Amino acid sequence: MAPSVLKPFYGALLEHGKAHSNVVVVTNDLTASCEADGFRDAFPNRHVSAGMAEQGLISAMSGMAAEGLYPIYTSFAVFCTRRPYEQVALTLAYPAKKAAIFGFLPGLTTPGGVTHQALDDLGLMAGLPNMTVIEAADATDMETILDAIHPLPGPVYVRALRGEVPRLFEEPLRVGHHRTMVDGRDVIVLVSGHLTVAAKSIVDELQAEHPGLGLINVATLKPFDDEVLIQKLAEARVVITIENHWVASGLARIVAGVLMARQSRAQLITVGVGDTFTHGGTGAYLEDFYGIGERHIRGAIATALGVSGEARDGSTGGGSIGLTEGVAEGL
Image 1: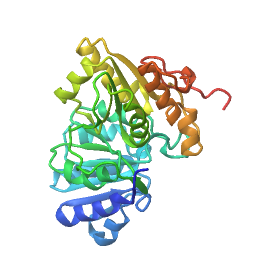
Image 2: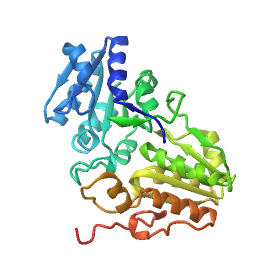
Image 3: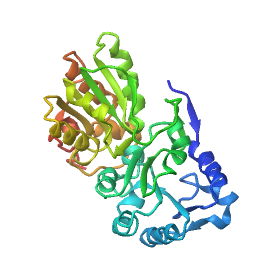
């Protein structure tokens, strides 16, 4: 099991504030919940709490950026993307303002149900011109992402992890760089976010008998323009995407577009949430119910390898591209 780090973003944000005097952190009523309370206490004159006024907060960030400040907004993913989307589009993305939005508790990592589960945030943000989109997978990502994105001239959206976060990587996150965790070119597994832990465990278990099985962590979802990676995907026999997001608008959609553009003959198998709204529950329960749990990851890889594994039930939300049935019946 991978070692864990408690609240890696807490210290990283504090150190980033010490290194850059123009950094201003803006929050709603979730300052401590999103690990920004250390920054608030150290730099009270550089912290703005706007309450539950996300639209106004985003517009204020644009003004801050116009005056040379670097605003960093921390909130739950659903509140900083879906609710103020018009303001993100028109006051940050359109004028390409230098700002960062950190969305915590993405997808099914929260038990809060449909009102709190952002399963559309990657699609929303990746659809905006000038927006860079990144998803953290481990503690190293959360410790190094602020330094990685600081040089970027425009807005950045980060799917963030909080609390006790596993450490998978030694090398710091680099924008546009994808980490090859297991080298293989026949069946390539692409995974983003916290599901990287489960995917790595399963691939490690199977790779000895299937040396053509590979695993790549995708941190930068936009831009998705690494030519070496794209060529590797185009030449694979099977590509599997694993994500904590709606299949129709996340990593699978991006990869499908790449494969189509290259006229690749690779089969695309997806593990993600189907075309359904979701309900509340524990993390393990929700992941299993909506088709992104360990047995679904194992089943997708087994299907690609042609070996026995957990049966892949199309109603769980995974399946080949386009088969995105939901499982909300009776709830």
